[in-house]
Amino acid sequence: TWVCAAAKDNGGNLGFSSPAEFKIDTAQPATTATPSGTLGLGGWYISNVIVTLVCSDADSGCSQTKYCTDTSNGCDPATGTVYSGAFTMSTEGMIYVRYRSTDVAGNSETTKSLQLKIDKTAPTISDNYAYDGTWVNSNQIVTLNPQDSASGISSVKSCEGSGCTPATTIASPYQLSYTTETDKIARYQAWDAAGNPSAIGQYNVKIDKTAPSIGIISNPPQTGAWMNVQST
Image 1 (tube, helix red, strand yellow):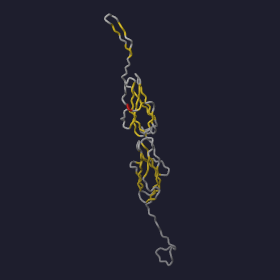
Image 2 (cartoon, one colour):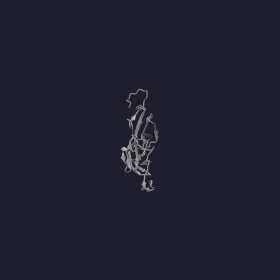
Image 3 (cartoon, one colour):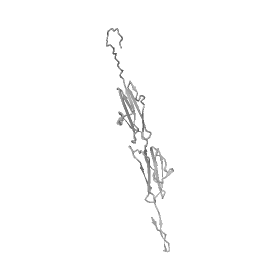
Image 4 (tube, one colour):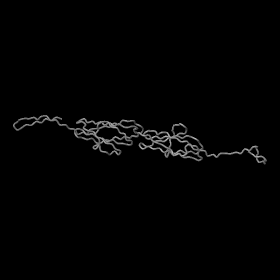
C-alpha cells in the first residue's frame, strides 16, 4: 500500500511528501505435507516414506519451514530441523512429523502434524510341537506363536497336506488339536496388520493309539489237543 501526505501552513503554502510504501501481512503461511511410499493395509506403509513439505504465503512469502519427528506427537518444530528438501522416514512403527513455517513478515503458522505408520518387516511364526515326525500314542495340542513388533498380528492361517497353502483362519491362542489317528503335514502362516506375510512353517503329526494284535500259528496245526511232537 502506497501513502502520500499533504500539509498546508497558515500562509497557505501546500506541501506534499514523497510516496511511502507500507507492506502489511498479518496472515499465517500454510504448509502442506505429502508422504510417498508403498502402502500396505490399514494405512500402513511397507516401505520407507519420503515426505515433502510445501509452504505457501500470498503476501510477504515464505521465509523458513522447520520440522521434527517423534513417537508421541509432542516435539516442537522450532527446535527441529530446517527443511531443505524431501526427507526419508525409515523407522518402523507409528511416527509423527510435526512442522510449521514462518513468512517474511514474521508470522508463524500453527504447528501441524503428519502421522506415519511404517512396517517393512514380515512377522515371524513358530510352533511348540516336540514330536515332529515322531509317532505318538496320545492326543496332541500344538500352539503357534506369531510375533510382529510394528503393526501387530492380524491373522494366522493353517492347512493340512504337503505343499498346501494356509487358508483356514485360527483364532487366538492359535492352537491346533489332534484327537484321531493320523499321519499328516500341518502348515501355517501369519500376516501382520500391514499385510506382510510370514514364511510358511510346518510340522508332521503322527498319532497311533491302537495296540498291535498278535496271533499264534502252530505247525502242525493243532488247537486244544495233546501232541507228542514239537510245535513250531
